[in-house]
Image 1 (cartoon, rainbow, N blue to C red):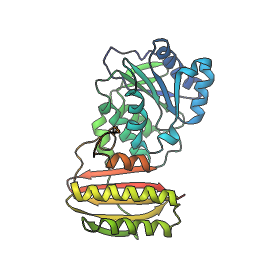
Image 2 (tube, rainbow, N blue to C red):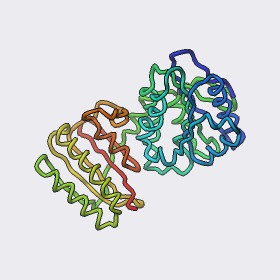
Image 3 (tube, one colour):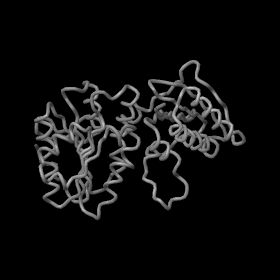
Length: 311
């Protein structure tokens, strides 16, 4: 494949279009071998079948690579930047870091996909000025044309057929704006209006709804934390009150909170949290616990939707 070498201090975020296993290996393994040879920390976050292909091709050199199952660690695209990419890059002692990150694959749901596009667009802001290369493979044979078009919009360079070209459609800001979709709630959703005096009652109402729907005890604990963080944020930052809605969808309990505030930091919830940090953990924790988080924010207010598996 075309070399992805960059100048010192420059961040690189190329997309790799591949068709079949042979092209996948040809596009990823030399990238990793270059990093290993240079003494750079290298990691791969991808679905398990792709990890297995890379391990087999690298042989004993695979011991020098960190492998992450993206279908677990990146099930919620909103936690990939802080927990997978920044988690690995920030732990490096210095010098360039190389990461393969594959957040989009055939089988991602319609609900998940806009969050994937937002993730890819936000990588550029999260790593600006850092000595990091993040190579993002896209299955050009298995993904829709619109997905590949979004890859052009969120990656400054696209590698296709072994050749790297600057993307003439690169516009991550426009991609973010397009995926800032309104999130209408379904008819019949349980609705609770809350303020600072009713936060405990609101949390208890959510837990009662979860029990009625058969949510496991462990997931109810996660739900309690998600509801507490979102409703408290609304009271402190969103005008003092808000509305909680709950419903089931595709094996998930969906918890949605809307208030009158507006998120001004596009990376809110995606900044890593230091162990000693006081405050600022709310949205990070919501992303960490949820199977998916969707956000819409604008002049009229902010809606945050958390999906938690019932089982």
